[in-house]
Length: 347
Image (tube, rainbow, N blue to C red; front, top):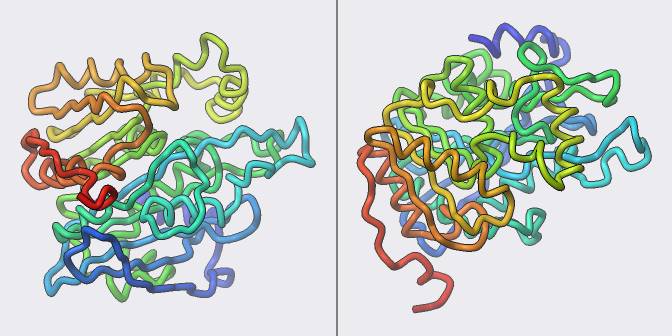
């Protein structure tokens, strides 16, 4: 597998990390079964020198369970080492702790909020777990929109002062599910046989959708992909008053034609969903409409406009989270009800 081939570029057996596995119980008002959250150190290293972690949400089951890989939002760092070394990590997004905290927030198991643009109530992982679907959450501490990797799209490490490896981490999440050597290195081997990736689904939250574009382009073939508030392309940022984003996209993508790293209908599986809102608070509306219009031309695709102000909706709306699960299980456009916020309102 690709990651196995690349591992030799990163570390040898004498420098393998000491296994660091933590296990806690997952909780949520809607949770209906016993679920563990297991945290592992990957072989990859964040810019701050700490290991990049990945999380496994594992529902109790006697039989192997299907798996969904969920890519968190917020993986875009604007800091520039070459312009201001003193503020290299000013935003904190290049730290292992920040990346892990984004997953804790997604699970609604964090006491602090790092991404104020997202309302994380943990409803998506809860609905998936209730359906007996395990979830793997890779973390991104490289701020590279899941685009850069040592082999595919390396950044200018000399100019930036560090190597970005978001795409390597996304590929690792695919490989570790079935690669016995990787599972042994990370400590996942004790539960690997409880995971059945034969019907793998992938969910991109916000900019986490970019990880799916990249993996699909590299030949990954999941059974289902779901995008929630993902920009179909970053091209709209190249026009208008987006100077900070333009500088950041230049460092991440370099001279790459953004059309080659955008949503591509030719790579999508038969079961594909596009959840978005005309009131999204984070992306130019053009980048979201492009995706909605594109998937509306695909037979069997589920396109859903929440008509809500905000960003990343399946994790704050339980009924929508149930719709995501239904679509993963059946491939049929779900009928959404009206019980989404009962846990919050007390109704």
